[in-house]
Image (cartoon, rainbow, N blue to C red; front, side):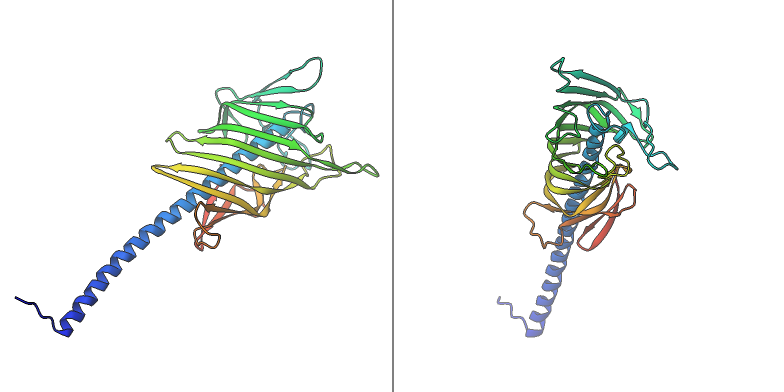
Length: 310
């Protein structure tokens, strides 16, 4: 028997089919958007967390003491409330051992920062394990280099691995009426891995340039130093069963104050692989307007998310 449909019935079937197809397409589109947003947010958060942790490593390597670095930065010093330049050790740890590797020559030197099985700083974070750094010379001298490795090192529950290299490219601006030095470093993070107890991890490689913007003429006081940071990074983050790869680029220079352990200003663009720069799923991490706090914002597809840095 041949089925003959009237034009009205045929039109009704087409409309119903379009509605069903449209509903399925919308559900598929919504799910795709959720996946895109999750991937963009995961990669931007991983990039921000990696930046935060290795910025602290930079501060700690500089801060050991004036024999190898600047002293009084990172865990070795902090602005005293109500003062204008004083510093205070965050805590009795880490234990520091300094060894000349080619005695009687002063350098190279190996410095072991040993946080033991757990040391809680004034910032409330627990550090454990060791940071081992080899200095070719005092780190405030042009050409000096400090290369750091990590042994069972953790910040809170995050295991930190990789190689961190600082190279000094500073220049002297003047000697009279006062000594003015513009400090500048290149900082490489190679083959880093940050692992969490649940098995999630971030792999990260970064190349940055840190250039002094303020405090050049107070070379022996570093609490007033302000730096801008330029550069790029790339990495992979594992969240559950997903592995997400991304590239990041500083589009507005990051601002770092030695009086604050967090970045206080600047924007990083985080773009997952295979996305175009005009994709709505490209994330922008904004570190604020210069205030010292552990807050940042991530904007994805026109929606802003607040994040708290560790």
